[in-house]
Amino acid sequence: MIDLRALREDPEKVRASQRARRADESLVDALLDADARRRATLATFEELRAEQKQVSRSVGKATPEERPGVLARAKELAEGVKAAEAESNEAAAALDELLYQVPNVVADGVPAGGEDDYVVLRHEGTVRDFAAEGFTPKDHLDLGEGLRAIDTKRGTKVSGARFYYLTGIGARLELALLNAAIDQGLANGFTPMITPTLVSPQTMAGTGFLGAHADEVYHLATDDLYLTGTSEVALAGYHADEILDLADGPLRYAGWSTCYRREAGSYGKDTRGIIRVHQFNKVEMFSYVPVEEAEAEHARLLAWEEEMLAKVELPYRVIDTAAGDLGSSAARKFDCEAWLPTQERWMEVTSTSNCTTFQARRLGIRERGESGTRPVATLNGTLATTRWIVAILENHQLPDGSVRVPEGLRGYLGGLEVIEPA
Image (tube, rainbow, N blue to C red):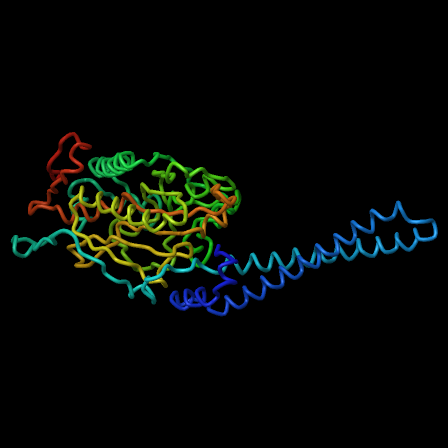
């Protein structure tokens, strides 16, 4: 959640953030009013409770003549304290409800607007000219079926639309990709983690995934648990209600998990193949840092994502995501989008978000400093995921339907250089 003190000191900054996100600006004034009411009711409760304690202590000192009056006053105050406490609790609950509706304050320099208002920061790699090479590229599903690597027909038969099997070399290719990501994480100080994929409502809400995009999340009502769409959720919850020691540097985790997304609202989008599916695997970076270091850590996460993309030799672009397309927790997000030859478009393959102290405030994650404790900053970034197979197959295909294995993955596939059609 946002910092209430910062809101009081500079409400216009939060209003500007809401405008940039195309979100409800009136929430800021409602939040200020709720905060003022909460502080006023709390002050009244504490004043009455202090008076009640004072009167209660005076009962024993009162004379027999004074005692009935003192007891009557003590009873009156007890009733008043009870009512004031109820009013204070109600005001606190109303404040919390509003706090959970306000997304993180966007960072300076984030483009305003919606999904199409991103800014392209740069392009990397060379897009192949298949026409100059003399053949028409096949899409990833045709290639995957020819290589007996992807089976969507049986995935649909068993589980329904947007499910699939990775078979043979397809399964090996995903494991190679994810193991390469874990190795890179290890080389850069990340602790590998196999994370839970079912989490409590408190953890899911604490990371900001039960807001505007709650319809993307699978909920198991019988157990009141949520299936995670990214290991970010479990990694954020790992240190909930803890005080961390960051004196020796950031805490960094690389979480390997299966991820689940309902893809609500994506009817008709990317229905072919494995671009937009309900279940996939991913290695996610997650960092806990002092807030002053968050921007620098964000740049490092992006650089590590690009290092992975270089290993699989994909042409891509980096975009600065517009405020209205940020998740509720993110203050800034950079996406890397790989070129998809058969659709002649860019497809997101990584994203990295700086969530500043937003998640940590909700989850009670602090660090100890010279002047006490304070919330930490949390950041996350994709290191590899199933969707990369789409871009790898299409960008490295050969005229006969075989696929060249990027050099960065060959060591994970026994030195295999070319995947031949089955």
